[in-house]
Length: 190
Ligand code: AMP
Image 1 (cartoon, protein in one colour):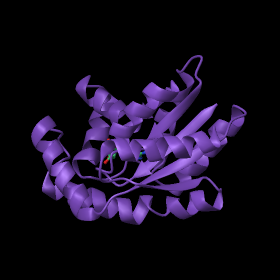
Image 2 (cartoon, helix red, strand yellow; image 1 turned 30 degrees about the vertical axis):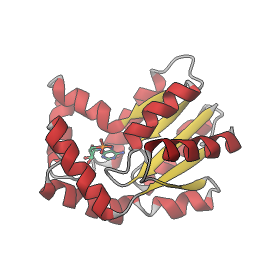
Image 3 (cartoon, helix red, strand yellow; image 1 turned 135 degrees about the vertical axis):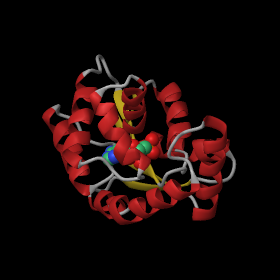
Image 4 (cartoon, helix red, strand yellow; image 1 turned 60 degrees about the vertical axis):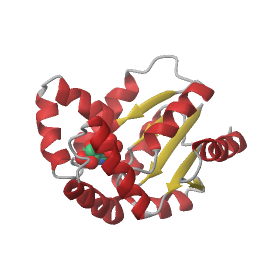
């Protein structure tokens, strides 16, 4: 089983690199943000709740997102592994993920931290907002998401260092070079 956490600030390229990793290693992709956007699109009650947080650039409560993650994981069949994209985002979420995997006799193989300078993140997110119309990719909400990232999410770097799972990847420059670095790191733990 290859279980990867892809980590980084909003705009660090988690989604883009996940697509390539999925293709090369033939594992499943769970993006909690994508799950929530699908709920919003389908007009579900969960979607309505999620939208309130997402529009404010805030995180959903841990209990709620942990439940969503658990049921998404339960729905996977014959999985060779999973790339977790956008989850965990807090220490209680990381602890819950560790427990969920342990119950299945599994563990996280590696946490890949995509490091990107703040000015590049801002530029990428504003461009994505223009291209895709994603509701939370506007300057005001991006700034809030970055504050939330620094205060609630980045402490996970230390958490995964203590678990001996932490690997930093330079997340800017040529897409191909970033992907090659990622593959070299995955191949070491595979
Ligand atoms: P993303 O697509 O990963 O950037 O997520 C978009 C938004 O969905 C975030 O700004 C949060 O509001 C919400 N979200 C996604 N994943 C999580 C999570 N693991 N914990 C809490 N909120 C989340």
